[in-house]
Length: 193
Image (cartoon, rainbow, N blue to C red; front, side, top):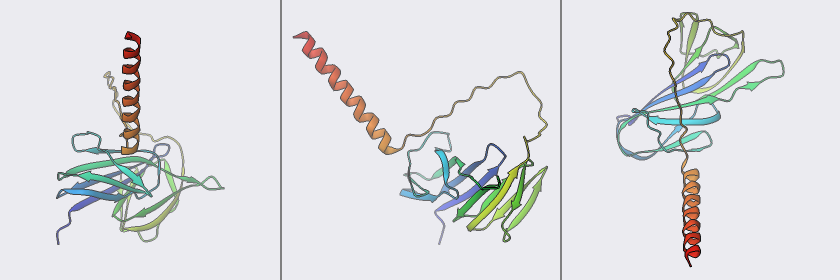
């Protein structure tokens, strides 16, 4: 049987800016698909297609529901929720249905890592752990800012990000606009009389 969905999960532990990125490829159209988030999100979740356009979605209990009428690629990104333990150690709880790559930057010092990792790779001053589907806990501390060597140029790049509006919020916005428009028309008609 052919898989209709291919999912790759990346978790980046980079000190003060952790993130989760899920790349999914759908090989056949489906009315509604769900993808389990490996870590509870701290804030908004962004879902975009391969051209960078936002895709409407619904989240319930760490499940993202998306309608994909055409095959293609989507990317889900968000900031993961990280616990702070009583001793100041940070804790990331991972519950994944997919193979997961955990990138640990050079300013993150793991105090505990899973004993059953599938792979370990060193990249520069950082490491990548490969985890099989399952439940994991990684405790760590941050040791300061990441030191990277970059060439600075005089170009100033301005980026803007937009967060998708889930369906229920979009419905409320449309209702508010319709009501405001109807009230405006009533006031104009009444004023003319």
